[in-house]
Image: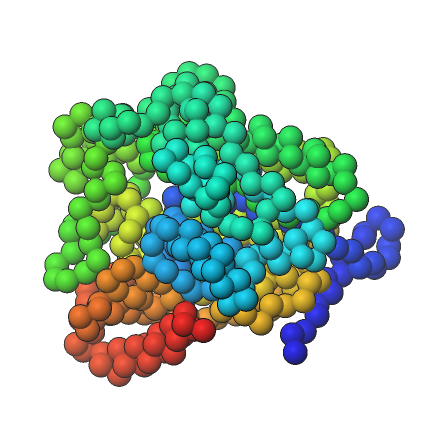
Amino acid sequence: MARVFVFVFLVVTAGIVRAERPNVLLICVDDLRPELNCFGKDYIHSPNIDRLAAEGFAFHRHYVQAPTCGASRFALLTGRYGPSSNGALFTRAKQLASKPESIPPSMPAWFRSNGYTTVSVGKVSHHPGGRGGSDWDDDTQTEMPNSWDRHLLPAGAWQHPRGWMHGLANGEIRKNAKDMALFQSIEGDDAIYPDGVSINEALNQMNQLADSDKSFFLAVGILRPHLPLGAPAKYMEHYVDAELPPTPHPQKPEGKTTWHGSGEFMKYNRWKRDPNKDAEFAIEVRKHYAACVTYADAQVGRLLERLDSVGKSGNTIVVLWGDHGWHLGEHAIWGKHALFEESLRSPLIIKVPSKTDGAKTMATVETIDVFPTLCELAGLESPEFVHGVSLTDAMKATDSAGHAAIAYRSKATTIRNDRYRLVQHNDGYVELYDHHADGETTNVAKTNPKVVQELKSKMAERLKLKSL
């Protein structure tokens, strides 16, 4: 029998305790490394996310289930391990159509069934707006059935969600990636790039939701710093003269790993330059990525400011989640898709109402933990079908060790605990890295057979849940 939790909010001004049904604002940021001021990178300008972390709980060892957008978002939105492909949610939608009784509800569907108005704006599921078709705007193909009261993506000058997803300034749509600039920084306001348009709609939706008597679950997906790396010039100003720290372990790893040739990155117009061979170009790429992070941070600020202005910040749980990490030259990779730390570690911040003093934790946690955590904080019945666990205990005791984190790609799986990362390839080959030594640069599997066996057993046990 699932437990029912009630989250009690302290109303300081009244000096009393009362139970309320809180709203939820879920902010999903694409390709966001934990390369933020509040996560220890002092050259990054991220004042709004920093403020959120200062008032909430920052999970410094949060790991996603997959280093690719679709599969990672499947884990967030279902609380379950699942397929490793970008089409994971569309696959689930087909299963739901044919055998609805066998597919557990998604997180927004669960909140919706408990009386919430659920709204999605931007890239929350894999396709912005959650539809299929050649331009991702076909209403007959739905990525998340029964989940959202409104699932929106205003494409603006970019014509359709597919154009918005890979757009540069002023409506430029990717047709052939080799003809589109890898990075760009043009003078103008926030709306000359895709996020500015979608955030305007998110603010409009927040206004509507605030006027309702129903609690709301509003999910907003911020595209940047996803490729191509385009942001208004005012955000690049922070980095023109910035000194960036050296890139750790920039060499291609030896032996068998999940290294790849950065195909998504390399297919853009790089002006015949390769950041693995051109140190000056590598710095340019990193600065443009940083500018996109600061642009994304500004959008977070707009959302938080509007939440304040509509009078809902005192009764809204705010979650900021990065859908995966991103390599900026580590292991000679530019992008995601590998089972290294840089691809799998991303920011997670949870702010609960009426709490203004933040804390950070080094507990190892997973994306699938967000669903049960939000249920407990909102006072909803805790779903038995999720594979994750509530993080409320870790939020109370910031010295918690957490639990091992699982991730996967098509040809390998990995488990990360406090000290080690183990990667097991489908052919049986194993990588083991010791984070108390030199991180993920030396495979120590042969000299630690006991550790390998323990982690393989734990990973196999956890992954059995995928078939349940």
